[in-house]
Length: 133
Image (cartoon, rainbow, N blue to C red; front, side):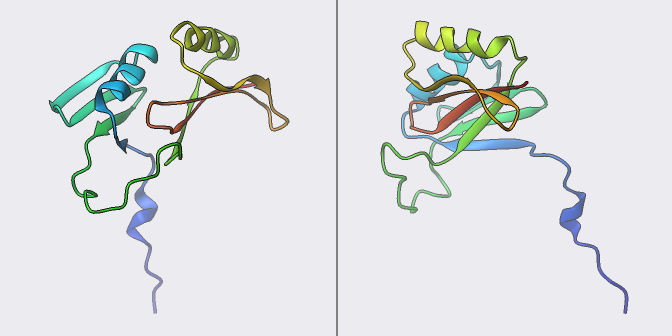
């Protein structure tokens, strides 16, 4: 009897990530203006895509998940980690301060070899900016 190989073994990357948003205008400002991610395309007022390296980060109104219970306000539904060169972690913190984005944890060298910075997006999700050190 031959062993079957799972078709999922062919997956090599996360192609795009979708955040189901509560406040599209605030989220669009955060990802498009504060983080300055380039707009890839806008399919509708309820679907906006940003280019992040070779991936897409999409902001979407709830549709297929419309009947799901919403994530309680003040609760992170996910954490996104974005890598930058080491010298830029502190510069990112300065931009967040200028843009009045509250910093959850200021730049800090971690024992696992990263310099990290944490903020929340307008929907409460954790956003990590990090660099290898």
